[in-house]
Length: 465
Ligand SMILES: [Zn+2]
Image 1: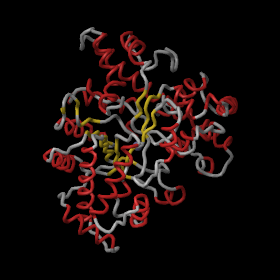
Image 2: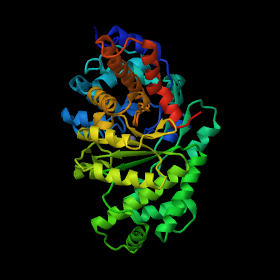
Image 3: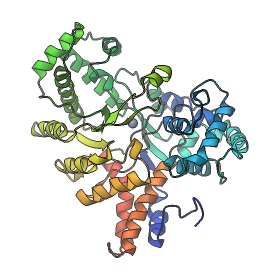
Image 4: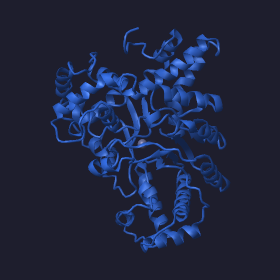
């Protein structure tokens, strides 16, 4: 078998048949990513491969730093061609890191380049890709169409006017580009600039924020505004669900203290956060939205780097927060009120795989859908090993067949082959089991399950037509 050939990751004949017959042609529903709606609306043309590949990609930055590349070639002022050379020099050293597979899959699927990227091939590949990128076939919208992206959901702050989503909606671009409501800034009451964020939020609605009640009123208005533009998902990035009792009365008192710039204790902040989360969840439930909870990152560990480059500089890691009790209390309290929204739980610490999968199973069925889903392998776990572990955990503890599948969580318009990567791994697992005699040799039935996980389950779950 040669590197990245047609049967890449498909180790059995059955896996190969499953992939080519059932998975390869399905459209993509990328229900969580960090793509810039402005770049989609304006149908941006990237001027070279560095701009589309290296700007903002902290996965690559980390690898370059680990390979001893100086920061000026990573996030600094060196020319794009020099930055690319530094990346190309790093690529051979990324073997066995997912970046090695992603990089070469992207070169093949977007640019038909089969060569390996190394120091020696750097300039040819850079020239070839960069001269393609400035043509119309490589505009942002063309890249998304090329990958058969049917729906993509960006990540947006509640104060966002969503003018680019409006512009895309009015255009005749076939991919549905929908906003996602991500109110982390409204929750992070400990942040120094919290009050100036509230001002920004207040301006988006022309309502003064002078109480917890008015904060909820504004957020409710923003949920409605987002909903009108097709938003059906929200997202929260938290270390864990704070351990505190939900109390609107206490949260109101705590919020007023914050408005007066008084210092809050840890337990007061936790009470505010879980109460606001709970109020938001009820709004999501009323709109039949899906609530995504990305839990477990410990961010900005290197404050010097954060100072120099800003957030998302590539110095985040896996945290070891306690997850189970807070999640259990939070989901259960919403369920008891009949206001638990559809929910996807993503863990960053792999020790929590089983915890999250079992937690999802407690609130599982609602009219034929698995209401609380155990989400796809995320961030540091988004590689072959992590994807297999997530799929196996879900198989062992829940029903893999009802899983809503993969997303890129990406900042790059070239990252859509990650869906192909996931589909190959999925087909390989089923193919192995069939050939081992651990599953019946019913390719048609298994093929349907694969199609559901790759596409139809997400379509039904998010109610996208
Ligand atoms: Zn994300």
